Amino acid sequence: MRQAATELRKTLAELNFDETHAANLTVGKRLEYFRTILAPKRVGEGRHRHVYGVNGHYVVKVPADAAYRNINTAEWNIFRRRQRAGSKWSLPAEPAKCCMVKIAGTKLLVMERLSSVCTPDNKRKPRDWPKWVYRIDCCQCGKDRDGKVVAFDYGTDGGAFKR
Ligand SMILES: Nc1ncnc2c1ncn2[C@@H]1O[C@H](COP(=O)(O)OP(=O)(O)O)[C@@H](O)[C@H]1O
Ligand SMILES: [Mg+2]
Image 1 (cartoon, rainbow, N blue to C red):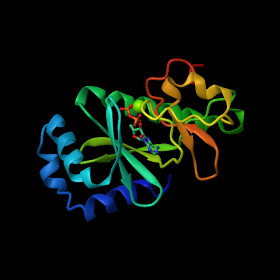
Image 2: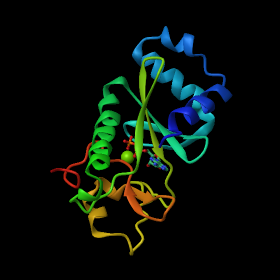
Image 3: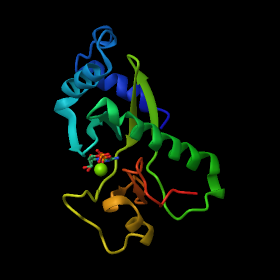
């Protein structure tokens, strides 16, 4: 995830994002501005966040409302816990890699882009996926670049990442 912040800034620059303009907006209007700027890159939408492609192998998650900002923070905290644990990670569940990037005072979550995603709409769950997937809300998981199954919507996780 080392390149994530650079790639997000590059993507925003290509879309003519105006950081000074963004910084002068209220939180809600600023999130709306991010969503408008990133609209051509849209890859998906959930109840709480709109998701857009970023250069390279990433997506960025923008809250649909200021009230949902804590979901990005919760995901980032779980992933940091996963990173710190290293080989001592004792849970079967694996979170997708992510990192928080602060732009114009707004925290955005950049996450590795997955393939074969299972969403509440498509419910695509290949049979060979590990059992812990069923402990993630609506099995919202996908495959990373190494073909490993990881969860992508785990900020409101009900159990799979509880200690
Ligand atoms: N890491 C990812 N890679 C590819 N697509 C993703 C990724 N994360 C989210 N998406 C897409 O964006 C949609 C919404 O993202 P999600 O994290 O589930 O938001 P919400 O918390 O609002 O449900 C997903 O259903 C999926 O289609
Ligand atoms: Mg979701």
